Image 1 (cartoon, rainbow, N blue to C red):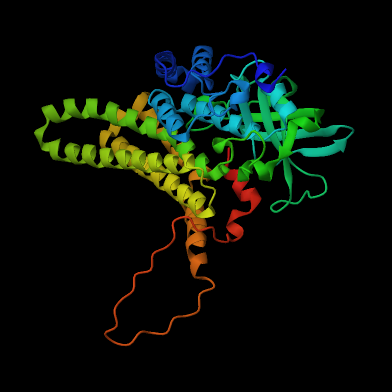
Image 2 (image 1 turned 180 degrees about the vertical axis):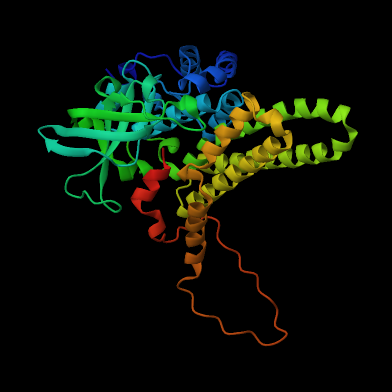
Length: 426
């Protein structure tokens, strides 16, 4: 029996009409149940089923398991579409896809445990090392608690990071990623957020040690670095932060588009009756549309770079900078719309909900501008670190323009320590 015969799940549908219909169904369900998800703190069973059928969980699953091995560009578009109806649903869809990419770094037998029956397996993850792992015969004893595990109530497997026992000190210490069945986890319902309430990002707990066999664990550093290996395609070897920020911004992009549409319907009625306000409303509309469209273009550019196969640190830093800038554009746009709407935005409704959701998304470590700026500046300044000081040119000499290489691989400073990286990669 060859490796393709192991998997009995259905193959990916790609860009077929059926796939488009399935995506449309997921988008419609997410929008219809968005208010309920915000109130109950959990996505509806229908939305979860339709998003799974639409292929989000299998998007980066290796083809050997009948996964899609899809692109960041396609996923960005699909997540943003779901985000126009419900940012929480889009967030979970983005993470199901991303975590399939990480699980592709498990040994083949571990992948068989996850995807042997179907590629449509929903996976949650906690990449900030926590808990403890102790070596035992044939594997590891894992126990502890991991917080902010999005979608933990509705997944089949979890990827949990824990420090290795010989190097427990973080940052700088080694850590491993462990695949654990959801049935082994106890969930403490700790997620009480202002926004993104439907993500159910609760705490996953192993109350007593659980045995994880060796074939269901791998190096966290290899996962975050996208280390190449047998059976790993281009989408699996993209460093985590080449794609993390842009995918985590995609729900905010969709939410901001929804906010603009809701606000525009209100403003059109308001402006028609009060000519004195028309100029202000017109400027608000134009500026917010500028910010949202700029964010979309930035994220599309970052997605193309993630799809290119680059592994250069400069490109990783650039994508982090772009994702942080896009998040700021989206936050600015939604804040402007919210303030311009005044009391109309303050009651329960789509505009108020998207305002809360985008604020919560923009606070994520992966899109923080100060961290992204430090990493990007380190990568640029490193080009000049070893250059000798240049003597001033004589008066009247021609000016020389210095062009920075686009794909240089500079040395990073301590800003990129593993603990920091893990904190931003969901």
